[in-house]
Structures are given as structure tokens and as C-alpha cells.
Length: 457
Image (cartoon, rainbow, N blue to C red; front, side, top):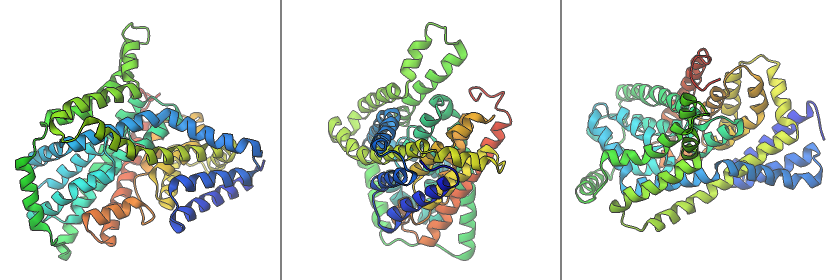
């Protein structure tokens, strides 16, 4: 097989093939990743008998770690959406904050609902309400779009059970409960900076320039929102929040009880079992189904079937990303890139962020960027003196910002919120980049205290 600097050339060519496949030829990311994995293996000179097994092995090992919990996470989110739990949470937070501080309320709502629910679903649900709020409060629509999109992206990139951070934690072999605690703290800091504070700056800028949107369907939207409030029975705030919290609490108990009581304590095996990510999410889905039942108009099995339809492509793309990562590892490309970059004495947290950010910016997919970066830097992270948990968060932070038109999320935000491409760049691309930098700064500060903070070393 090839060795030395030629491996860098093959890697750059592989990234080029991936970009052209997705951007130019509009290939599905699943097919594009498989083609890239195959071509990379051939160019490096991997024995032809090992190519198929390497790709399928990487695909299978990735899904064995995150497949069950990803599927259950989508189901849990579907129950929250169908029962009105997401709407209850957002309305409760909005009432608490008031219309003047509604962008902050929207950001927090997006932060919470973005954990179990994918971004497009959140955007579809919030978009009509935000257009009405923008008119009632005279707050820029770009500010609301920034708040909700940055918040949901922060949780998607950083917080389990979404696929991207799950793959990173699995790849680096870190405890998901410990990772969850520090990741959600980082996500909140990033949301505050890139979604709320930067959003306020956008509002001031738009008011100064007289830049605002008028929506033709606004009266119809206002009537529909009022009608929905009067006719639809929805779960209470605490019931809605409990659907989200049950699996999270179980996972946290499974991670922190052993730290507090020691592994020799007789109750630790029970908490480890209940806190296993797959078991905790299964319990969470069963609980969500029971709580949601009085508030849904369809059968539980129909909702689960709909969720299963959504899961398929997500798992295919995630598994194909794992296959590409396995090829990079088995061909020696990942090790060579890591060794080459280490010669520049770039701090490991910055290196994790930069590689992830560059790949994310180049090809658009957060999941692909995070999986590829974790594959490239896995050995370097283990050899470094910095906590793997913080390195994992830095990788995830690189997947937040600089979303460009090669990212399907870019067009989802522009379309659902009915804002221009220029305003999508201002609110989403720049806001996400600020959030990512804030996350990197926060984990860099945490690294100064990693010997004192629980679970990091």
C-alpha cells in the first residue's frame, strides 16, 4: 500500500470526490460516502480482498454502537411532536420570558426540543409562530431565525442522542454520561453567545437599517394559532419535560453513581444497566408512549412506524460515514495526517476544531465532518495530555458553524422562515460560527481545570 506524503494526496482527492459527488452531482450522502470509501481503498493499494470487508466492517461497527439509540431517539422525538409536548414546552418558556425577551425564549425552546427532535421538524413547527411573533414584537425575523437555528444546531452537534456526537463518543471510547454533562454545558454557552447575544446585535442592525419582513399569510397564521390553542388538548409542562428528562436522568445516574459509590458497591451494576444508553432510551420511549397516549389522534404503532421510516436514511448515512472512517484508519491515512499535523505544534483542542470545521464547511454535513475528524485524530487524542471528553466536544464544536449553501440545512432555514439567502448567511452561517468559537473557548477553559473536574481524566 502507499505510504508517506502520497497518502495526503489520496486524502485530498478523496475529499474532492466526496464534495463533487454531493455538491455537483447531487448524490445522496450515503452513496457518495460509499463511492469515496471504495475509490480511496483502491488508490492506496489496499488488497482487493480486504476492501469490501473493511467497508462493511466500518459500517457495521458504527451502527452497532449508535444504531439502537439513534432509532429510539427519533421515536421519542416523534412522540413529543405528535402529543404537542414540544409546543407546550415552547409556549411555557415564551410566557415566562415575555414578548420583549422572546428571542431568548425561542433559543431555549430550540435548545431543549433540538435534543430529541431533528432540526427540520423544529423549524417546521416554530416557523409560523415566529413570523407572527416578529410582527407583534417588531423584532427582526432574522433574529428569531438565528436564535432557533443556532440553538438546535448546538444540541444536534453536541448533545446525545443525536447521531453525530454519539459516533464521536463511541469512536473515542468515552463515557456518554460524562460526555453529555460537559457537552450540554458547552452547547448552552454556544447558544447564548451565537444564538441570543449575536441575535440581539442583528435586531439592532436591522432596526437601524429599516430592514424587516412582511408576510402575506400573517393574519391567517394568527387565526390558526389561536384556534389550535383553544381546541387541542396537550400535556402539561412537567409531563412534556419529563418525556425528555427520563432517559437523560437514567444515563446520568449510570455514569455518576459508580463515580460516587465506587464500582464495588452492590447497587452499581443495576444503575449501569439502567444507564446504558440503549436501555435508558428504550425506557424513555415506553414512557413517552404512555404519557403521549391521551393526547395523540393516531395509534402508538403508527407513530413508531413513521419514526422508523425517518430512521432508515439517517442510519445509512451514519454507517457509511463510519465505513469511510474505517478506510482512513486501515490505509494509514488517518495516522499519517495526525503525525503530520502534530509537527506544527497546534494545540490538540484547536486541531480537533479546525479539521472538523474545514470538513464541515467543505462538504456541508455535520455528521460526516465529525465522524471523519474523530477517525483521523483518534490516536493523537489518546496520546495527548488533554481529556478525550474535551477533545470530543471540540470536534463537535467544529461541526456547528460555517454552514454554506452546500448544506441542506441552509436551504431548510431559508425556506421555512422565508428569509433571503443573505439573511440566512447573517443569521445562520455567521451565528453558528460564533457559537462554534464560543464552544471551543469554553472547552479550552475547562481544560485548565481538567485534573479537578469529575470524569475528565
